[in-house]
Image 1: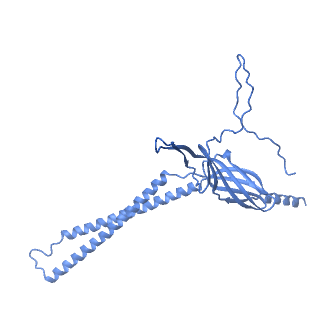
Image 2: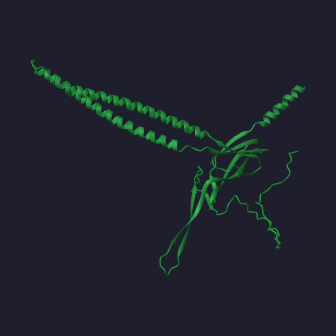
Image 3: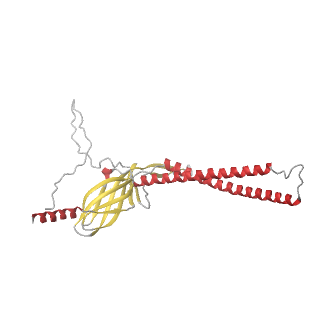
Length: 306
């Protein structure tokens, strides 16, 4: 009886340890671009089954600051953990594509060698026919029938050889163009190696099946903006017109398509909480108060479900 109870307990533990994993593809909906870096916000609505599930937000920028990742859920679910990782499958795909291009280039180069051999063979045949145009000998009479047969043979062989030479030359030009294109693709792939894809794994728990909305936000590097000005003067009697422009750059390896874009000149790495001012007493040999950099803290108490 004790053995049966232990078996049932182990079965329950294994069942509860099973997790459902879902890949969630999202598009950036809001982007705040700072002087250096940008804050990206993505939204998704996911059907969550009962129990523990892992949501994998894929195809993200590889330049994400892992400490800046924030995930909020609107629904009857509990976010258990948020982890950041890289996916190198695209790099493996890149290596296979590069190897495939090199194999194709080798095949084309072998075809070019064979075509050059065929062209050289036809040129040797034409040279042989040109060097043996003398029909008969000095002391040998040549009948009209033999002359016609010889000239017909010579004309047919020369025409066939030159026709074949034209076909081989056209095919060789096509192979040379294909070789140049393959070499261009190989150089481009070798120069622009792909970056790993960023992913965020969110573990959630739901007591019942529910459809839940998620908001994923993170800070990303390789983006920013800088101001520029256009000054126009139509006349010395008219006011000067100054147009304020923003030049936005982003090389985050993710597309910002139809996003709600904001520009900010603030620094997201600096706390917005003002320091508490200290009293500064004026007196002899008394140094002014010092302020240390403010670091946000979160405190509280964690309890289990019971």
